[in-house]
Image (cartoon, rainbow, N blue to C red):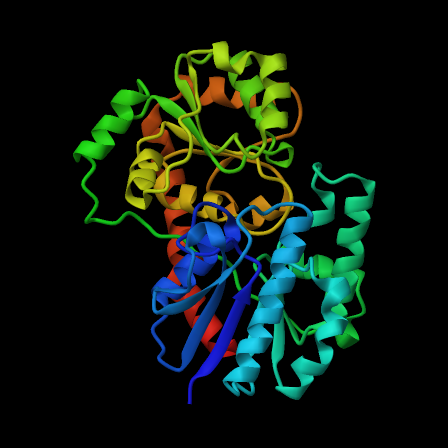
Length: 385
């Protein structure tokens, strides 16, 4: 008899950026066991009705925009729909896997249904959400309370970072916590990708870019990813290479507007923001043909974008924080969150012999092959599911 696993808290699949979305996409893509059936909560923007993707049932939650309180409502409805489906179909012994702990204060209201159906609740706490700069004092307090409530309620905490696991065990009573570490994964170069096809050639032409002549950033346009630091240090370095930001500024329009006034981003022809790239093969080629990747994420967890950079990009410049050091070890160049650190690093590598970086690049790929392949990650999830 199949075990049913309900995953709630992501923006659904197919993935369009985001750590959780990438994780759910790859978990279901690489899953090989027939003993598990996945049910993935997805917002209405993905479809108007339920659909199958990667052999998983994707069930629609009637919300199209997420963020702030809407994400809490989205998760509440996702949890309620999951329990209703379990009740209707008598799926006793199912697992509900919550991605992040924003439902913490509400979990007690579902306790009866969860216990009645012998449902196990697993949690991926993500990073240190209450440290994100976008939250005001009230928002940070909510996240802290939510973390406390969720950690006490769930049956198992799955940490994608050893640093996150250590942080939880230090700050909470170990007696009632059961934790396990399972990271995210990444894919090394796919030999079937053709880097000269029409779409890829057109993308480079449309953005006036030449291969191996640009710095790359891929991720959300938010303060805790240190976008301002990256842009400012790049400008001050005087580099002749371009800076390409693969991101969606629409969701963070206020932050972009303020940064634009300060740094004149839209007037700098060498800073390119071509928008989002949802074609996975195209994004791989963009990564592979970057001169270097710049990673400024600082708020927690193992970041899929960083893993993909290690797998595909020749040189990686990474903000030195514990989460990033855990992933990269000695396979990247580190910069500090101080004026001049990234600027000096950019100037240094541009004056160096590129052949001297080949060992570093191979170290990065070796770390992916040893610790972060999706096959390895999926096998670890098979054990606990």
